[in-house]
Length: 377
Image 1: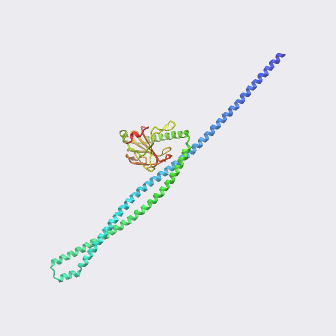
Image 2: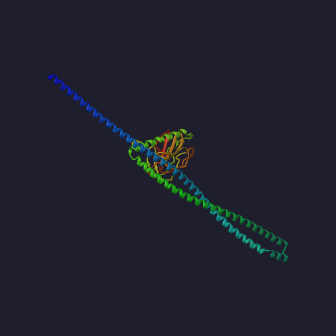
Image 3: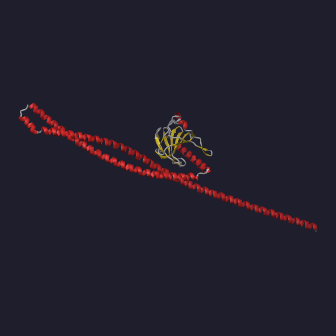
């Protein structure tokens, strides 16, 4: 009997132990599931924040692109208006000189006409009658008559010349007025466009600041740099594939290439940008609006806005050699244009979202970047 009670007690203890273990396992499982759910919620929250961040960043980049294109258009129109104004100023200078010369001619012709009229008056018909009555020789009379005819003919020519000079003077005065009106209009147009340009540049600067704030963290900046480089690689590869450039390349021009702009180097080839990402080209400090020169003869194969590089132009020199120019304020050449060494192809700016105006310059040979400095003169 006592043995039965002992076995019953052992059974009850074993049952209680199993129940305790089960309860512990159940509680632990619930707690683990709760932690997993918390982690999943956190991941979902972070993914949502990242999506919202990227959406805002993409929207800012679209704004930057639109602003850069408007600045590009305004800059090219200002450049055209300035060229037209310079031509107009030259025309005005030439017309002013021509007008002064015509005025002097009129004064001289009027003086000559006055002298001829005076001579004809003094010679008058009554003088000829007196000479006839004085019985002068026929030879003398004939000579006097021819003199009178010469005076009359010269006077007629002088009158006609004076009339023609006055007509030229009036035409020149009319042309001068037209050119001065054009000059006034161009100056007003330039003033308006420069004001518009300043407004767009201020808006671009604010957008660029917002973009820099969005990628302020090292990881975000690194991700943006990698994505921008990938975009550039794809664009260059596509441009090279489409282009049919039959030129000799730059192999024989090492150390002779034209500098695209003058200024100190802000960044050198191979310097670290962020993390493992390094500069594939150089960045030259230059004043906004400075002309960017083609470093070697070639054909434009890319002329557009590219995220991270702003308004970018690429020139294919043949044999797989290519030069790239970024951060521009305006692009002066279109795809398909042929350029010569030293020819202006763009204007320096900060369209890549840079904090200061500068020029990004890169050389690629068969798709690979190379240090541009040893190639430049």
